[in-house]
Image: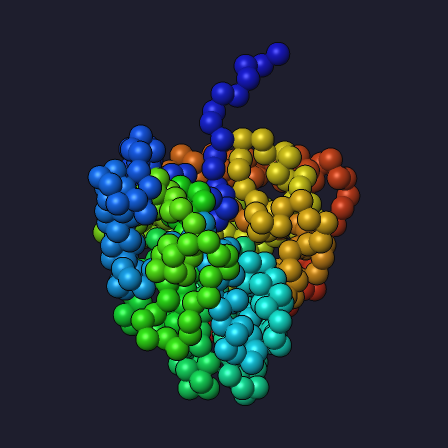
Length: 402
């Protein structure tokens, strides 16, 4: 028998969760060693409260907003629900895109008011004409994600905010995949509400925040009852270690967002160029430029994604969105972009981040190419021709780039 492969797993699933940053790990561990409820008035309680407010200030600096505009939550899912449920009492309808995360799409459906869904182009960008039409229906909450979790495609939030505010609508954005990965300035980006999760950019899991712009005519209504925490907007004992870790991650990334983005983009481009040169059946999904620096959605026509992942035991990647893993249905995001079911089932998402190295990428390229050859051989003479949906998508991208 040959020597077993002892190489560590190449982790390219940052859109599911990022490895915790050393600064966040140390801060969280220190907070766990400290006894204190941030609501208590004794010394340990005041120390915990001070640590929470320091973390709030660090996150506010990353977002360029005021600390008192931030409400700590258990993550973006809770923040999305808090925003949408609050808006449902004041808005006639909710406008979402066809590629929203279930934390927005399902919350909107459950809110009890009309839901208008705006489609996307073949490259994953929003159909602005459909947004304008949806806004004509009356007072609304527009909830459009900043960056797609499966393709990384970036939405033009400045335009979305402008059109929505002109129509008298409020704007919420699920910025889970954007925060900590590209610069964001909430003094300039005039969204009313914005959600985030700490674990996407190197904080601990189980903590996030909702940004609620000061002066936005929308009372935040708590999802639960039982205390006056977070100024009455989110009751329950604060997760002090998680919040402290989130603040430490925000502080760590704040001064180097641009630098990290540039490094990650170069690694992603290296990965895509090598894989697509070696595998003619590989096709990229989403806008080639208007996307997060660390996301690569690739369709390997004729090669099922689950078989590809099985053939790469030392690779951590994802079939579509991590939150829909195990579902029998193909990715709703890819279907909304015009891919057929077969191509959606043959799609993998690779997402890079702050700890990804050149060696990781070179090993990942080798694993993907070897897996493709292995799966192709196992399947036999299964066609690898480009499907009509993929061909149409590529032609659309070529026209846009011309």
